[in-house]
Image (cartoon, rainbow, N blue to C red):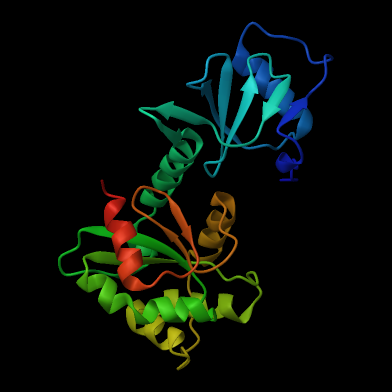
Length: 242
């Protein structure tokens, strides 16, 4: 999918040549298709703001348009409620991300369960990433604090990298936990091949906006980019259940 350069402007006039349709869904789809024929639109609905429609893209990103599809807004939509500003865009995007992550069977992950789990985090990881290794060393503390850790693969240098090959070997190991422990402590993992989900998980990461590792997805779908010390990360993760 070619980029739309959404950040170039907050509002974009799409031209009067696009005919107005009685159905806003049709007009909006027609307008966006004229920008990018392969734009992955998941759903179109009225937004909480009168006269504005929200467009959910595959992966969870949100756009906003006028009912006739001639104006496009990319950015956050806030609602002021009880003296506080609620980021409605972030809420919707997080909900969409959580739905996609929840659809992944744990059998396709490398899971480090907590004995008394109160919540879980899903971590897009790269075995060659220093901060991923640091986070991995703190899994026992996260588990002790009630946080289950679930890994998805995200080789930062792409599917032809050494990290991608190592991640595939981890996923193809008989004992994924032991293999991940070895990989994260640079002990080396015996090469193994099988039908594995590494490429699929890498693609999903890009789709939902992962651009580095570790990227932590909380239970509510909110993304925490980068390393956080175990006590701080556990606190954030547990609060996400509220």
